[in-house]
Image (tube, rainbow, N blue to C red):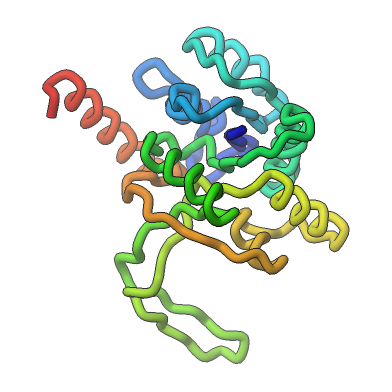
Length: 239
């Protein structure tokens, strides 16, 4: 069983929007999160979708699911105080849906709408083979890492990657890590792969599309608008 856990619990302060959170910004009559959900909803290997959402926006999301005929969302849960907490709420809902059956979970940002079917398939296959899968892109600029002693380390660009999403795991494993974090009173893990690495899990990677950006700033939104136009032209003209 393959379950997508989409977290959309953030308020999007860096987007500077006043009327609505960034995941509900409208593009061509459709909220950003619906673009994201459609990719997972249309993928034949995805059995169910769970969404962690800002609680006050859940009724609006439910309305949009009906309007755009998203059929695989089995549960919408309130987000938590942090991204880590929102993901945990979604994972608990996935656990309830799985009812003890083995499941792979693909954890994805609601504001990464430029994911594609191939990347989702690659995540599922990698978890089946290795137990974990972190979608990455190659680093295109040099990374500088500041050490605790103040010295700077510049790792080889050829060996450096940027973690994106989905970040996918066996449901039992990622839940175990989250519950260890709760027991340790840790709520500050920046993403799932950081948490899994901290608790000793070996991480495997795939290379995903460079366009799979997170819509965080106004500039990102303009990039998304351009990419949606490109995809529409490809469908119309067969490019």
